Amino acid sequence: MMQAYIRVDSSLEIGTGHVMRCLTLADNLRKRGVTVRFICREHDGHSADLIEENGFEVFLLPICHVNGTIQNQKQYSNWLGAPLVMDVSQTKEILKKERADLLIIDHYAIDEQWERNFRDVSKKIIVIDDLEDRKHDCDLLIDQNFHEDSKRRYQTLVPSHCKKFLGPSYALLREEFHEQWKKQKIREGSLRRILIFFGGIDQTNETGRAIESFLNLGRDDIQVDVVAGKSNPHIKELQTICQQYNNLHVYCQISNIAELMGQADLSIGAGGSTTWERCYLSLPSIVWSVAENQVEICKGLGRKKIIKYLGEKETIETNFITEQLADMISNETERHTMSQLSYHFMKDVLPRQQMMIEELIRLDD
Image (tube, rainbow, N blue to C red; front, side, top):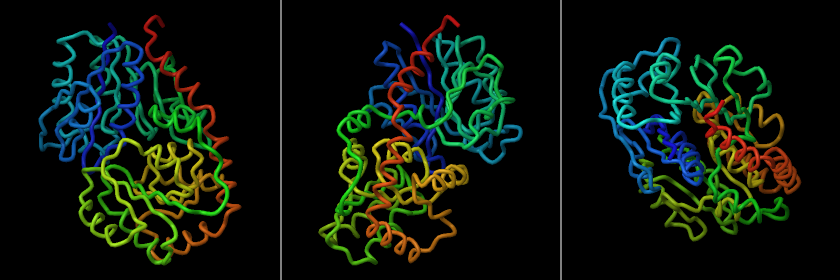
């Protein structure tokens, strides 16, 4: 049986997006008979419990309070939670116990310095990335994000034999989204329901800002679903606010986010990987970026009118969000057009994802 290991982390700083997309990939591999195990660092806010709940074994590496050192990538070096040589040694010790057909890496603090150490213990190295800011020693690279000049990306950063799968058509979306897509319709008509979701952690409480912006409208005729992860440090505050209003409903760590997206007429959220879930289900969205690596992607999608991009979280005021939300609620034509554009932008996801997974598990290259 084919063996795959995934080196990925989550934390209060990193968020949960990397782990979530790796879980999607792991589930696809498991369906094809691959045994998948995770290797994660024990950061504050790690997702080992969630990974195990999904039926995967997790090797949890102890935290070390010495920053890693990645040349040209100091911004994310502390995300490794240990010096580079220590992380390599600890990870390699795990892989030596059983052969690895696939080693999958989704980590901003890892580059070719780390990866080249595993050529002797893994038949194939796969990297999931979206920064295009460092070299990789890999056989296959996945970057699911939107860039207006994607064909040139990573040209000098990966080996010549590396196969690249670039763009939202290769987004790693869970099965629940594919099932919802089959029955999803282009949005039209009046707005009755809004979904607010800013990822699994939302350290700066953008969820609270979005709720406040909506409440400023005084629209008790519109239902609002608020979703937060169990690691969200503001969850009790959010629950207290929502309990005061009959039309606000808060959910914590749910497994049916696709269903809620399907029911919504409009979403408010961040510019992370959830962007592709919303677009896939043709859901019009008001978006602001909560991390630097989201900015250019959001700007590009905004220019294409696939999302309504408000700007970076530090630059927008609550009253501005309220104004833009009021405009979207009243503008049925804009919402309908945005829904149509999202559908056409993402309609090839399922066949391309399946093709990518089959290519990933081929070992006869």
